[in-house]
Length: 106
Length: 212
Image 1 (cartoon, helix red, strand yellow):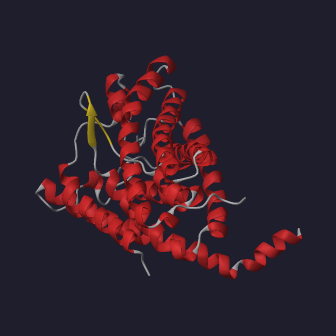
Image 2 (image 1 turned 60 degrees about the vertical axis):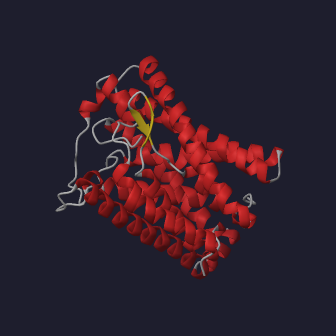
Image 3 (image 1 turned 90 degrees about the horizontal axis):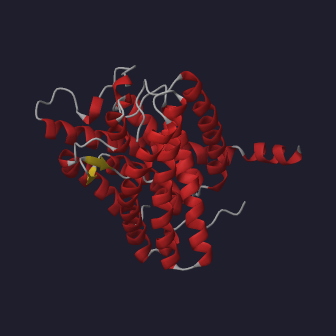
């Protein structure tokens, strides 16, 4: 059962990802700005091939639409992964109570 | 302040991996004990909200933008250990899927934003909550703690960059702090608004202070 307020937070996340993220500022962030001002940002490299680089879903020509799709995909992916991690952590607690007792025994 | 690959040298990102990794491993065992089953959906939603909110860069001043980090907000609502796991999850997905933050430096980004940012800011929050044990204390603590969290995470980030030979301490550190003193206000306003909304009807959503 999900509380109403938590449902509202999820809806807000979806709205931010879908409708607001395409209009986010494209100014450099604090670190990028300092890196530009003092020249070290040029050392940045890409070591892996990201499936959705720079929050632009590949194959969508319209940049705002590509950002919105990347945003919703990322939001739902994060929801699933974090929920899964929470579930695994709790699952381990239930079956792991013996381990807790053993540790106390030591 | 997601550090991209190439800015930190191996000794610096290696050290950060060890420190950040050890802390997150401990956070896993603490979350395992302290997280309540009813909080699991909240943990997922909080991570999703932080991911989405981190996409929203807001202009702060002089052609520079900042976005929410969300570590203290999550810590106030779910406890600092779960918040650390949530932040680590978001940072890892951003690095591997979205090219936001590097992979060799992921340990450093975790150390800055999921460890230092969460725990230093949460510590400040607890001081306010203790001195002022009501809703006002929670909200003021969230505001100040969120601001401190961004400033200290930025300081850690600056120190790592200097340690990697990318700049001089007395230039990079003041520059990082100047911008993040402003960006921290964005953090503080959003985090406080969310905590305020969520505790308006259900004050019990605020995580009680950890017992041990």
